[in-house]
Image (cartoon, rainbow, N blue to C red; front, side, top):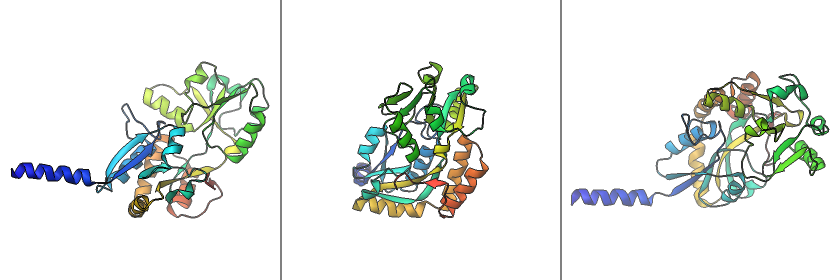
Length: 284
């Protein structure tokens, strides 16, 4: 009877815990939800560390697509450990200090087609690429790019060399380049690097930075702007220390490679919390 009472008491305690729903999305190497490196991505490892620091809550992980994500962040008891600030979300979200930087995005192409784009390491201009009717761009309708990029996309929307996709993913599949469905699409350099690493193959894709995407994006932890969310954020703000963020930087460099400029901006913006002209906040 004593053991039975203890079991019931333990179950009641577990049920009494409030639940935090943590949002993530399938995007290697940011969130890795299957395979050998499951849970070791840039975003999901950071999520796990925050969860471990808050054992007083029950934690539920939710993998969402972009459209569902934009709906879920408006719900109560929802937190995101590692994400940019969505435009307008400051009205219904509590945000932490900067916790990370998303590296500058650019475009992926097949190395076999790089003669159509430029030399490796060259910084390209999207305006010039869009003016070429012989190469086809793919972009996702629900993703937020830079203001300059969206102005250009609006100019070329409906043109045959621009593929507008409303699919709910956060990135295109690299295989679309293999199949010649697209000649280039927006993404981060880590996508093709991680693809080669996880599959144990040679990287056959070339990544280029764009002048219209020349800044890093500030990443934050945030929760619902409700009494519950504010209470959780107060605890998270004590958990998010410089020591934890330097540990996080090690994971970033594991997947993206070491980059002197990135580390300098990370130290300035994330660790020292000083404004940098090289960092954008899409929520502004």
